[in-house]
Image 1 (cartoon, helix red, strand yellow):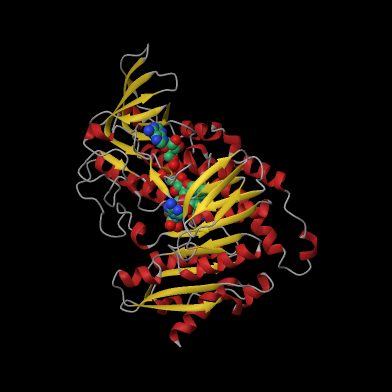
Image 2: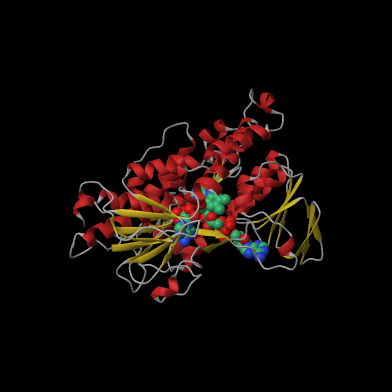
Length: 494
Ligand SMILES: Cc1cc2nc3c(=O)[nH]c(=O)nc-3n(C[C@H](O)[C@H](O)[C@H](O)COP(=O)(O)OP(=O)(O)OC[C@H]3O[C@@H](n4cnc5c(N)ncnc54)[C@H](O)[C@@H]3O)c2cc1C
Ligand SMILES: NC(=O)c1ccc[n+]([C@@H]2O[C@H](COP(=O)([O-])OP(=O)(O)OC[C@H]3O[C@@H](n4cnc5c(N)ncnc54)[C@H](O)[C@@H]3O)[C@@H](O)[C@H]2O)c1
């Protein structure tokens, strides 16, 4: 740790500057990528008194702020509000018309900060981290080069650590015709400025179902094409079933078990060839077919790692085989979620600080301060569709495959007074998984309107390993949707 860092300064020590070679600067920590994860890692390192350089090639705030969480949820919030309101007597008649798409898109633009990062740059400045704009690449042990847009290069060296927080990007399948098809990825789906008359969505994962929900409600005729037998294949099957039913009810076409074999654009129309011999036409096509790590142009080969792959890490998010290289957030493929990446940043930041201070033994046991245990045991996720899906921990199939003796306890949410009051004709389902050997919960899934805000109660139960006997004393308020907890526990206890 440097003395300048302890006073809250940037701790930078500069070498030569000028020309296209901007010289060398030294910091305790160099962070590659200023998405939510890089920002949080930088903040933790600064809080520990370490000097920090952050390198960003696009916008400070990352994918999440401009092309993922923020704009997608700003698009979806009006959709869900309208759908809920239409199910409440006395309100229904007041919200019958279509959404005001122009206003929704403007609301989205505001939540994406008009794709400007001034606010987040100011925040970085406020924590005393130094921002370098440009493409960062590893250049051997503890060295990073930064190439700015004008080609100017400088070198940063790290006394303690380099943290790779470069996130992920959308993957496009290699299909005949893809080159000229100008498909949407999640970036266009979250930032488009007008509503296409018809939108084909390929992929039934989270991006596919959320964007199908948003654009159908904004006025597109959506065809959702999923190659799996159900939507949201990584969640409990009833989640995808209820979301598919609702999308169809909203007017979208949902086709399951079908693969796209070709894509062809002619003028304003794109035609998708399907493996069942059929075809689909639309003005735009979104490929929501998963993510790849942003590691292909990162200089990984200079430290003996393969470019283009996910970076495998231990529970402190340190790359296997290195004592100075961390990989945090999407890029390590543990859980591709903002909140989980930020959690990793808090854990990895604490581990880095302890190591920098020479602490001899880290708290690396499960649930210790330096082990991102929740990544394995308690990852929460909300899918912002209508109905919402909120889940934490493994599904029944995953728990059984992992060898747990488990009982799934199901409850129809329409039987809960708070749910019936929430909207007319409430449709939803809850499942909790009880580990029969320890009598604690392994996982919980809720599907239904308004369940997103219930999820933290389930996360507390799972991460806290609260015994079922004690949960019995956690009395849910009447008449809220959370009374489903009582019903689940009653069902379990018989
Ligand atoms: C449409 C969509 C919706 C989503 N919605 C949600 C949601 O509701 N909730 C949720 O929890 N998660 C959501 N996610 C996932 C979430 O966006 C990611 O998990 C999160 O952005 C990961 O953060 P990160 O910091 O690891 O990476 P990113 O946000 O991808 O940030 C990485 C940063 O690194 C920069 N970078 C990359 N390479 C370099 C380099 N060589 N040099 C310098 N800088 C570099 C990039 O420009 C970027 O700014 C969504 C994803 C998508 C696609
Ligand atoms: N609300 C949220 O928390 C939220 C929202 C959006 C995204 N995310 C995160 O972003 C990540 C990326 O989401 P995603 O939906 O892009 O990926 P995903 O991996 O969740 O889903 C991709 C889907 O595309 C399908 N697929 C892959 N290749 C295909 C092909 N060639 N043809 C047809 N289908 C194909 C897969 O079977 C899968 O169902 C997820 O891990 C998710 O956690 C989170």
